[in-house]
Structure formats: C-alpha cells, structure tokens
Length: 198
Image 1: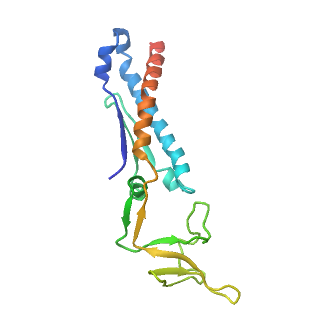
Image 2: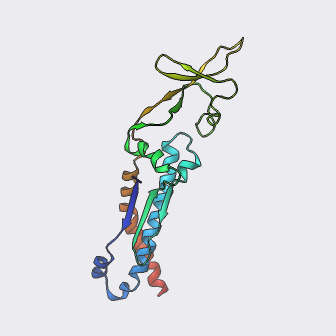
C-alpha cells in the first residue's frame, strides 16, 4: 500500500463564513494554499529523510511526490511513488515490522565492512567479484573476502531472508502535523494575495 497524505478542505463551508467580496476569490486561493502546503510537506519529508536515514540515496529522496490540486478537484496528495519500488522499500521504515524475501536474500554488511557514500556495499552489483566467496557461518551464509598471506579471509556480509525493522520515519505524524499548522496560514496568505489582484 502506497503511503499517502491527502490535503483538502471544505470550500463550501468556508464560503458561508466569508463575505461576498471574498467568495469569488476563494476557489483559486484554496487551490494555491493546498498546493503550497503539499510542496512544503514534500520538502519537509526530504529534509527528514536526510536526518532519519544514514546517507540516503537519490532513490529514497526522490520517492516523495506531489499530485497537485485543481479548481475542479481541491485535493492534493503527497505520497511515496512505487514505480521503482520506493514505497515497498520505505514501508518497513515507516510501519516497522518484518520484511521477508521469497526470492534471494538481503545482503547485510557486518560492522567494519567498507561502504560507499550512500551507506551501501561498494560491490553490491558484483557480490562475488575480486575473489570474494560465499560460505557457511555459524548462523547461515556469509560473504567473505579473499584471504592472503598477510591478511586472513574476513566476513563482509551475511545473507538474510528476514529483516526486522524498527519504525524510524514517522510519515503520518510529520504529514498531519505539518498540514494542520501550515494550511490555515497558507489559506490566509493566498486569499489576501488574490484579493489584491481583483
């Protein structure tokens, strides 16, 4: 299930509370306020991802998407896209719980294994290259470096079918909190702007 925050308002109810001079500007102001809130939320998600995750890649940071509101449909969506499995990848970080692989295994680096600047194995696209080999560990299977006369073979990573994740990215708490704080301010700002334009 794709994680989504909907941003909408009851324009008809607001119209009842406003004078006649405001009403003709309300739809456009509402559209602008919803979209401004949505894009601020997307920016906040990206900033939070940089704090919560260890060296997040562009795959993670570009996962947050806005579907804008229109005059015909005054609802915007901020969601995690799933055309490259970003939603599937991030779901355990948001919801917590167990992630299980039915085909293949997760390759989990052990402490001390060199990682790239994104926090991933440098050789993840060529696991068995450069003399690396797979053999049994005490608890399953592991990836080992090639041993030399001066340096014995070392465990680089372990293979796991199941990973237990803690929920570390409060997607919904961030979303609902920001919308509640931001939208009323944006609504006043946009309505004031359109009233000046006439």
